[in-house]
Length: 372
Ligand SMILES: Cc1cc2nc3c(=O)[nH]c(=O)nc-3n(C[C@H](O)[C@H](O)[C@H](O)COP(=O)(O)OP(=O)(O)OC[C@H]3O[C@@H](n4cnc5c(N)ncnc54)[C@H](O)[C@@H]3O)c2cc1C
Image 1 (cartoon, rainbow, N blue to C red):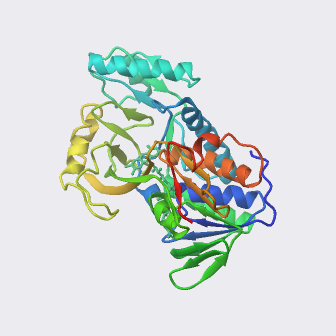
Image 2 (cartoon, protein in one colour):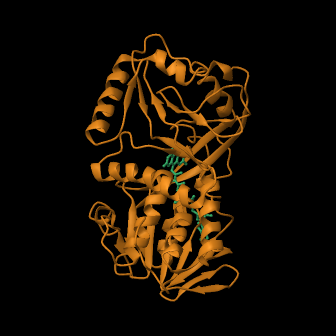
């Protein structure tokens, strides 16, 4: 674990999603006086409406790929420390029935191995031993297995990290909405205010709004996405499964969670607006080829979540330009990266060296404007 020391530093963390919760835990652990301000409850934002898988496949450039691999290790450390059952590292299986897509996947896997990610090539017969309820098209010759990939329960993680920060490290959790921020601290919509030496902006898709409170702008896009969750299903499944046709994973309680890049396309820009009413059924029926046991299973819910996407695709981690009191931490792949970013932010705030230089808010590829 990081050797960060932050005795006496007053930190207000805005947002208790996977990232804010992890930052709050790591900084409180390092001795900071941490106040977490969360609008609803820990994990209630995008962290509650995500596919939440852990993996590094096809993440580039190499520094970002490495951060993903370190992210999984950091989750293991955090799980050992926090306890609970939010981390599931049973591996992921990737395959393609289409030959051309299979070649592209094979190339991506070769790149993974070259960059140090563990990958196994399995015969479909071996997969049937590992996952007896999974059906693989006869044309498929090889299935790639990432043995250390997995998924997390995002709300459980956020809740466990915030509880540990509060109960073991003296942090406080405040329910409310930050509407003003300054070098003195933050003010909430009901007039309460909290003093801080550093305000950490971990507001996820609302990070741009928090930046603007300090006259700053982050080059951040908001992309609406969605996942579908089934009712409890009569299938056995431990791995995350990814093919072009479908991506799914177990979600606890016998439920299966489905994700597709197009799922959020017809939702409005609001987490409570329903996308296409046919989506749930369509997501499950598209998966019955690989999990035939889903044939008569219905969708229980569609969850709409908003991704914060820095325009150059890389995390934004560090103090705002010309602003030493506001520290941003916002990224895509925020589930995979939550635990490692918590460690790195604590180390960074303590003044010790980190390798966060590629992810600073003032990098040229972002061209963050400081308007103060
Ligand atoms: C459909 C979908 C699939 C995804 N799949 C994956 C995946 O497989 N793997 C992966 O790693 N990532 C995935 N992601 C991305 C990942 O879910 C996010 O990067 C991550 O959840 C972001 O966490 P966060 O803590 O930054 O944001 P959030 O979870 O949104 O947390 C921000 C918190 O800030 C609070 N807040 C905001 N403004 C204020 C304010 N003014 N005052 C007080 N509180 C405030 C909100 O209430 C919220 O709880 C996916 C995202 C989506 C939408």
